[in-house]
Amino acid sequence: MIIVFDLEFTTWDGAQDRGWSGPGEFREIVQIGALRLDASTLAVEGEFDRLVRPARNPRLSPFFQQLTGISQADVDTHGVPFLTALDEFIDFCDNNYVLSYGNDMVVVGENLVLQIPDDQTPQRGLPPFLNIRPYVNRLLPATRGESAGRLSHAAGLTTTVDREHNALADCHSIAETLRHLRELGHPLIDV
Image 1 (cartoon, rainbow, N blue to C red):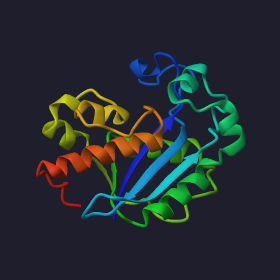
Image 2: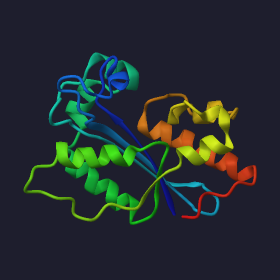
Image 3: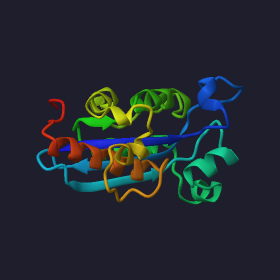
Image 4: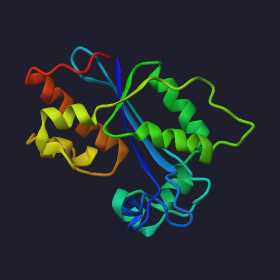
C-alpha cells in the first residue's frame, strides 16, 4: 500500500507571500486528507478525512474559509484536537510510505510543537514521508507552480476533482496524476 496525503492549514490573505511571518500566523492544520492506494494498480483502497480544531488560532480567517470551503461551523462541530486526528492518521497509514505533493510533512512537524501539549505524544511513530513534487514536476513540466488540487488539470487529464484546496479532493488529484504517469510508463519512485 501507498498513502497519498494533503493538508489544509490556517492562512490569511497574503500569509503565503509573507511565509506565515505575520503576528500570530501559524500554519495550524485544519484538515488532513489521505488515500490508501494499492501499490500495483494505484486504485483507491481507503479514504481518510478529518477536520482539526486549531489551538492557537481557533477562529478561521474569512480568507481561509473562502479558499477551502471549510467553515467555522464545520470545524466547531466536526473538528477534533490535532493529536486525536494525528493518531487516527498514523493508524490509517499503518507504516506505509506517505507521499505528498510538497513538504506537508514539515507542517505536520510544526504542529507537533504548536498543537500538542508538552505532556502528550502520538501513540505511534510517524510513517516515512516522501515529497513527490520534484518527481512529478520533472516528468510533467506543466505541473510546475500548480497546487496539489490542480495537478490533474495541469496534466491535461479529464478529472473527477471538482474542488481545489480540500485536502481529500487534492489527494484524488495527486492519485489521478500518479496513475497517468504510470500509464506513460513512469514508475513511482521506489517506495
